[in-house]
Length: 89
Image 1: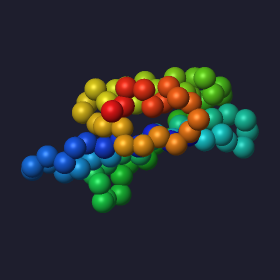
Image 2: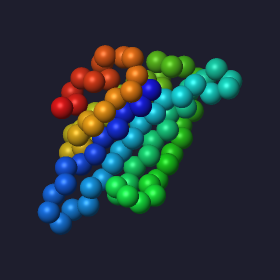
Image 3: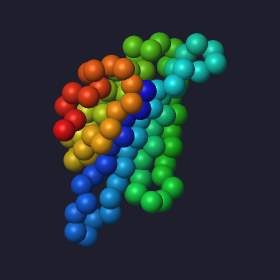
Image 4: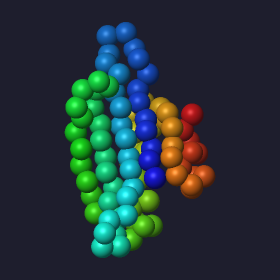
């Protein structure tokens, strides 16, 4: 499951991206991987472990909402949960 967002290109401001991914780990838990930075450069990556999918998804949705409020726009979503696409355009 993946969410990719970026800022709109403004005069004088660099294009920024923010990506969220959920991946099952080999022990049955879930990892949320966050990557963000300036488009075209190496970004910052952070990984957070969750024992349960519901908690991982809730954390992902909270971060998505936070970034949308900060001016990021939803560019695309890969995954099969329709609620991931809400609030993004």
